Length: 171
Image 1 (cartoon, rainbow, N blue to C red):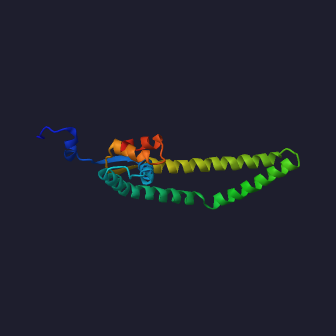
Image 2 (tube, one colour; image 1 turned 180 degrees about the horizontal axis):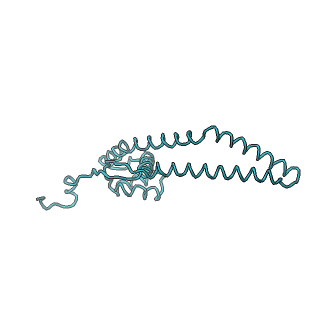
Image 3 (cartoon, rainbow, N blue to C red; image 1 turned 135 degrees about the vertical axis):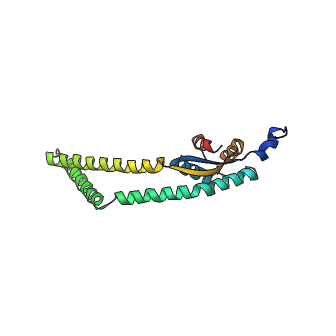
């Protein structure tokens, strides 16, 4: 049984490390925010906690960025390139029609509708891939941060309260 101490003395009995599951995007956002914090005003213990969390979050962030780039590369295949060329041609047709002060023909309108539909489907597919990457759960061991110490870092940084809210799960 623990002897009766003031709350400040209980720190040594509390395990600040916690293993949890979280969404990948949450870990990525936390990594990017923590990386930009100015920690000079924090206690040494809090700075070490930030450093340990950066170390734990870095692989998740790097893998996510790599996966996003791979998805983009995969989606930008030969068909994508061909559609890009069709966009350029359609834009040129629209420009000429404006210069000549004429309406687009039905065929030109159909071409634009077809291009727009293809890119809408392409964007939807990309968003589905990105969402699946972002929503994927990862297990991570982090060191919980003291909210007061975190606030000190935020005061010295150009970060917003919206960013502070994104780190709430680490406190």
